[in-house]
Amino acid sequence: MSLEPLSKQDVLSRVTEVLVRSFDLDPDEVHPTAHLFDDLDLDSIDAIDLVVGLEESTGLKVVEEELVQIRVVQDVVDLVHRKLDAG
Image (tube, rainbow, N blue to C red; front, side):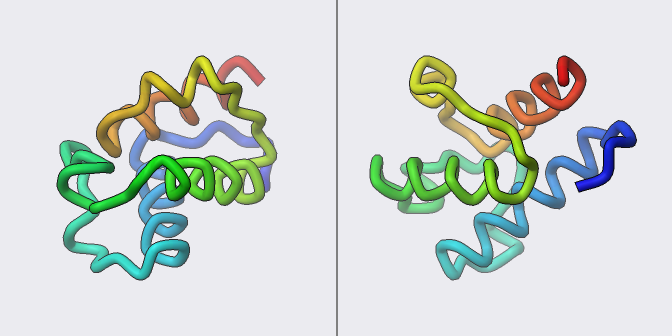
């Protein structure tokens, strides 16, 4: 991954890519307000797989305390964007 800053739109694109690839989702279903569990039918194991995919894609580490706060796609985008900015 490049070290240049990513916009939230860039992060959304990466998160969408991971969700679509990892869970065989329709890209049109993945939008900022999509609830990971209710709308995208992910479960707790899927959430862990999502984190692993994001860690592989971005090189970032996500801790359990951060994971439990994630509910919608935008939460994932915000978390990744915040960690990239802090990085």
